[in-house]
Image 1 (tube, rainbow, N blue to C red):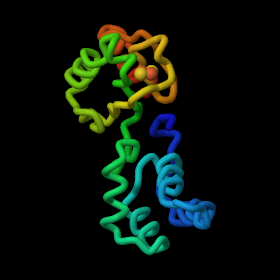
Image 2: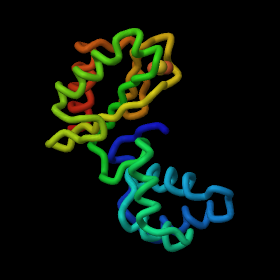
Image 3: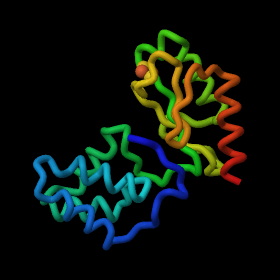
Length: 165
Ligand code: FES
């Protein structure tokens, strides 16, 4: 999943959500592709999306919420202006990703999945960005960065805050 910025997402639209549902409804295991596309379009899984999906797929809302909260790729809340994903995969771990992950949480004062209090940055974790040769890797609003150390991380955050202004 590629992270986008908040401005790339559209506000909730029942009509658009129904169109997404209709596109996937006959697929086997339609739930996951529907949720992925809903998040890709709206930036998170809105409670109204949960209602729609549960009703149309004949599932309970609890079942749909269960999937949304189980898979870390899904968000229940709108993301910050920037989404920064820190890779914690094996290759990145061997190059200091855990130290970077700790630093990222401290620097932004949020845990993974959280958004800074000013709404500027959502911090997420991922377990391989396909950039192992340049680990530790970070994805900033869909842009891949390699060999990111703590100072580099801070620069990326500062740049994405400036860009968002
Ligand atoms: S493990 Fe981090 S990019 Fe592959």
